[in-house]
Every structure is written in C-alpha cells, then in structure tokens.
Image 1 (spheres, rainbow, N blue to C red):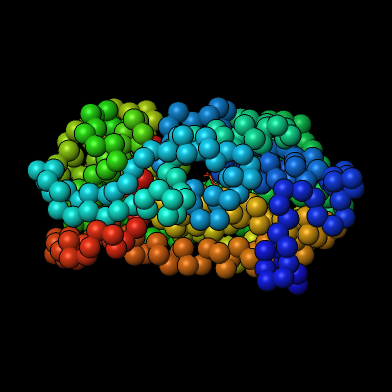
Image 2 (cartoon, helix red, strand yellow; image 1 turned 30 degrees about the vertical axis):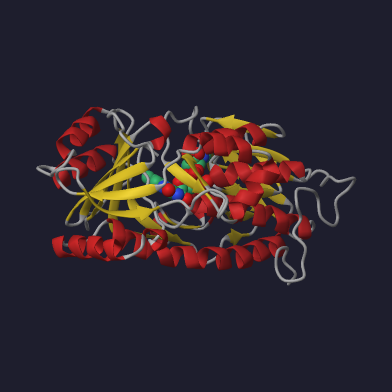
Length: 404
Ligand SMILES: Cc1cc2nc3c(=O)[nH]c(=O)nc-3n(C[C@H](O)[C@H](O)[C@H](O)COP(=O)(O)OP(=O)(O)OC[C@H]3O[C@@H](n4cnc5c(N)ncnc54)[C@H](O)[C@@H]3O)c2cc1C
C-alpha cells in the first residue's frame, strides 16, 4: 500500500492530493470530536484540503490553565506550515533544566531538558497557548460546536448519522475521535474504556503554584520514595505537580477521590509539600488522573478513526502533544492520498503513525523511573549517576506541572 511519507511516496503538504476537484474535495464532510491538539490540527488540514469540517468540543470555553507541553521533532515543521511557529516561540516557557532538590531545597543533581538554541528546534509552551493558536487556525474554515458531545453513531453504507447530546443530529462521511484519554468516540465505536486502558501504577495531580520563582529556566523537583513534587515556572504562571506511585483503584470521574489521594499520599512530606497541599485543597482548578497507557488494537472502525491520546498514549510521558500534531497531519495526508477510499487512508495513517510512536512509548518507562524512584536508595543512585555525567550528555526529559 502506498502511504504518503513512506519511501518514494511524496508527502501532501497542505493541499489536496489526487482526486481533488479544483483543489477541493467536493461534498465530503467530517466530524472531529475534541478541540484539543490533535483534533484542531486535523481540522485545519482537512478544511484546507476542501473537506467540510465540524468540530464538537465538550468544554464550554477555553480552559483557564494548561500544563506545559512540547512541540518538537516532526511537529515543528507542521507548526511552521500552519504559520504558528513564530508565535509558539514567543509563548515558550524558556525552561532549560530540571533540578532535583533535597528537603532544604538544595540542588542535588540536574538534567538539561532543552537543547541550546539552533541545535534542535523545539519549544515548551502552556497547553492552552498551543490549543489557542491551533484553534485560531482551525476556526478559519471549520464550524465549531462547543459544550456538546456525540451521544450516538449510526452507520450505513453511505455515511454516519450522528446524534449529539444537545445539538440537532447531523450526517457525516467520516468521524474522527480526537477526544483524548477518556474518548467518548472510542467508547461508542470501539468499546468500553477498560478494554483499551492500562493504569501504570502512577498518578498525576497539578495545580497553580502562587510562589515567587527565582529562576524561570529551572523546574525544581523534590522526591520522597514513590513520590515527586515539582514546581514548574511555566513562563510566569508557576504550577505544582504531584506525581506519585500507587496501586489504588481510581475512577477519573470522581474528582474528590483524586483530591483525597494526593492529600493522604503527601501528608507530612518535606520541602514545600505543606504549602503545595494547602493550594491543592483550596483550588477549584485542579487536574488529577491516573497515568494510563491507551492501546487500541485497530484505530479505525468503518467510517470512524481515532487520533491523538484517544488512539494511543502513555498519558503524561511519551511526547503526546507532538505525536498528536504529527498523527493529525499523517491522517490528513493519507486521506488526501486516498480520496475515494477512507479504509485505505485509515490503514496508511495507522501503519505510518504506529512506527512513529513506538520508540516514544519505550522512553516513557525510563522517564518515569528517573522522575519518581521507588526507594530512597533509588533517589541517591539516580542523583549520583546524573552527577557523574557531563552536563552536555545528561538525559533529556521533563515533567510538566500546572493544571492540565
Ligand atoms: C499533566 C500532564 C502533563 C503533560 N505534559 C506533557 C509534556 O510535557 N509534553 C507532551 O508532549 N505531552 C504532555 N502531556 C500529554 C499531552 O497533553 C497529550 O498527549 C496531548 O494533549 C494529546 O492531545 P489530544 O488532542 O489527543 O488530546 P487532548 O489535548 O486531551 O484534547 C482532547 C479534547 O477533547 C475534548 N473532549 C474530551 N471528551 C470529549 C467528548 N466526549 N466530546 C467532545 N470533546 C471531548 C477535551 O475537552 C479536549 O479539548 C501531558 C499530559 C498531562 C495530563
């Protein structure tokens, strides 16, 4: 099968592929569920290729906060083609290193998280800034329904009838499930979440950190066995992240359970824990979830295809934001290359993008061990090993904080 981007097959950059009518795919409609990183990127490129694009987003408005996420590797070229790269650079957090501190706040070891300028182009930005820029681009040519979700999907030979929770029903040629870790489209078209999700025995909670930041280029991280507390300067909007190990049964719909888990796990902890817990308890803008691996054996079912975290992720670790951008472009290139055969397009997309994410998922395990050692001796060994490395060669990985 010929897939764009594979050896000898050209990438479709921005326009329509074979089969387009005057540069446009006439009368083809797609519904994208989720106005996140993957969904907005896909919407932009599909509308540009002439598809009639509708996006349905569950949230009523933009979220007030957002974890810093990365745009790196293949996602950089795509951001450039979309014309958002200079503004992403302006919005960059400027963080360059991760400093492991002890209970007195004294540095014990350091990792470089970002290469110096010009070697590797990449930025770390607040997720909201990235989503805001993608939204600006996507809404140029797409229709957005907010505060709504897909309630039911009915397929027939010629298309999919979609019932929404609030809006009138509609009919679409294709449906893209880009609605994240707890995807509703995946549940409706593929099966219950438990079939595809595997908790990794870790949890993450984030909340704003109203503290003065001495060094806006350094993330500070304090470990106790099985837990970490991070302060991310986040370009002037600092955030705490609680990342910890545990085997608790957890229901992501139960916000209060998350609050209690952080409080019981971190009670009596050192460094800034007491202050961070006070913020955690008082805030109405917390994020909490289990760190989860999503693995869907096949990303397409008929006219429905999954994208971004909905299809595959190790939430928190695994470079999900850049993968979401790259996956969206891979999918839209595949649809342009197979304009009359969505099944072939979906197969190309899945084949190409699975190869892209495989190595990223492997490095996620290393990152989790490095950031949250299980034992006190593990913390000491980690710091000793890092201190023995020359600074230039230190492992590059970064946790994020602030509410997601
Ligand atoms: C705390 C935290 C820190 C992270 N740090 C990093 C990092 O440093 N680097 C990195 O690369 N990645 C990071 N990630 C991962 C990254 O944020 C995700 O991989 C990325 O956002 C995935 O993009 P997406 O578009 O698939 O999903 P999302 O960005 O989650 O977007 C999904 C969208 O769908 C909407 N939605 C959900 N359900 C429905 C529904 N039923 N109907 C309609 N809309 C719905 C949501 O409101 C949201 O707008 C982090 C994740 C977390 C949780």
